[in-house]
Image (cartoon, rainbow, N blue to C red; front, top):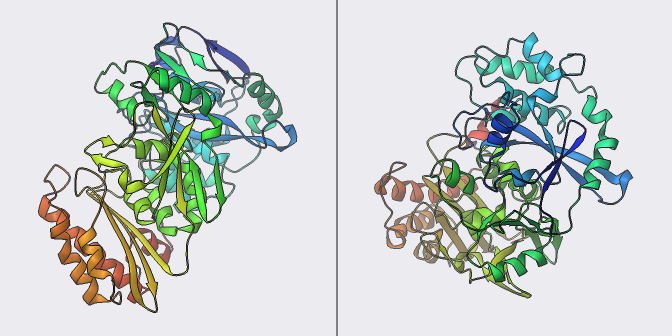
Length: 493
């Protein structure tokens, strides 16, 4: 086993052997390294003041000519230091040249007056740095998405957007030095399990190592992206006990298409999953655009969102409506089950001791199947769902032969509306059938009232979403959603 975290920073390999496993990257940078350009704001992954960028080797690994570095913005405040292992770390202090020449992003922020008090500015700069390296010609919608996880209270967003438009795409030092950086990243590639001193935390490099560890430590806290578990530490001050960090397991991060399914490894990030699912299911693309922020999506994993078992996780109702299944593994044995059967009760899943989610299997689109999903929340960006709905219908000669209507926020688990489904089957999907299905929801759910919505609001809204879906099928040119409306008028979502 290895006993140290290694990453690349400013063209050098950094080795850490004495950092606690729940030490956040934010605290490490500010308190241990004295690099205070990265700010602490909300300390829960919402405001973006702590944004840093991580560089990861991508492409055909092992073939130097086919490799590159993928730069993505993440929140340092809820990211544990172990997540740096094998990556390149970029902070705001690293962007200017050795002679003080500003990076094109920094210069654009100066030229367009994109900063007033300056507290949020480093986070904005780092989000734009990631955009600089991922999109050559971002439009306003893409810029807004990149900045949705960064909050500013005094400058206003217009000059920051202006800076984003003006920053250009001339190769910077990171592009020029990519060959050297790739060589350093190859030199620290880890194939063995990382074990922290005392044996209280591990970071396996392969799924086989993970399976073996979980047999020995079945009650360990599994950390993938840390976008939820990180808050257990920063906000609840919880002792996580034994930790197994799985974010670096490459063979659980793959995504493939075969035999009519898209198979998504459990450690694939939401960003990675969205890149392949959004073109196939545009509604999923709109949903993932509203899943946290770009920083959150770059860390969070689809497998973690599911294994978390939250009744308000955004992905589950949509994936249930598509008929997705889970691949579970314990030791050398695997089993597969429908996603809706995975959730037993509030925060309780079907995982057995020593078992973990290995992959999610999503059916490919079919010509006879309709699909839609809707997220209802008080804010468009960065908000928890009050109601989340995923709808799937199979039609033959205009008659509904199968229905899958799934909801989040309506019960203690993500759940199918079986009575509403029955009201649709055997009928044309018209306004009458939609009204009957909406009325049947009262037999499927007795939702709770909480700070996000009342029980009555949830039940009425869930029914209205079925009516809305039917209307969209009957009147397809009508723009009924914020992204579609924005595109129709040529603006930004």
